[in-house]
Length: 364
Image 1 (cartoon, rainbow, N blue to C red):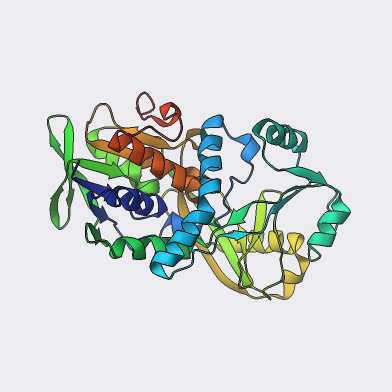
Image 2: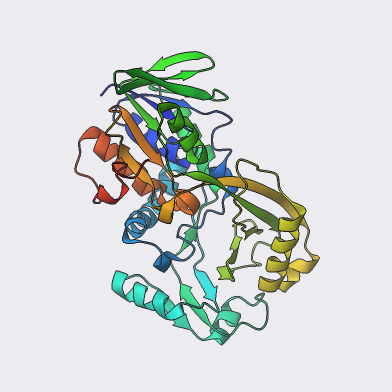
């Protein structure tokens, strides 16, 4: 394999391109807007599913591999590009969970560090926490990655490679077919041919597959977030209660998220969500009542059944490979998803069993 077109410049498309380009393959990465400006930019960057015990073994396998890979990835990207993705290990407290017993049982089975802690200890560790919480469990090793900086670092790493071409603001309109085989894409600027095409267009992946008469069960799910700026040491750990979370960045920015809305491709931030997120912020961290919201935005996640991504070649269209449908966990699962896809494309021993993610039999 000499050349590949990657459609979609989010974290998944960027990291897929980087892994393939490192083997000497020529890569053209095509993005309809600016690289990394959609879901990858808009998310929170917790390097764990919000409730890891509620997911299938397929999601867990990708998450665990990626969590172990992230610290090294952050260090390598900083060394290569001078851009620090800020992989920040803070740990995470879950408060007043309904399924606490299931969470602890899952952790024992998986051999992951997740402990029940006395609520007094949680308040001691996170003094700014709101009153009235009764129970807590804690995972000390969880990191968050500053996702806008991660995509900036990945973009910089690709821009420095002579065998990579980045084409931004270049919407893909369809695929080039020879028989059933896919051998390139059509864009507003003309055709781009390649031996293989990787579709990593997030929430837009399904729209592109419709041009081949395929129904991919990936749909846009809107998520809104707000951002505060506090002192650097204001919040020492991530906290999560009632489905909402607070994430501290190293410089004192605090992210509060997020909503889950099925509103098609509408990305407009709404006043209702703003008020709801502010209420959650103040319940978690009451002193935020007096803090200014410095940002409020929305992104579109690629919703998929059970959050299990599609990774692999489409049997009905050889040459077309999928890496999409990561729902709320694109950043969490990106390293393993992209490594698995690269292994499959290059005929290497895959890092994990690829069967649960195979597109065969999962499209309509």
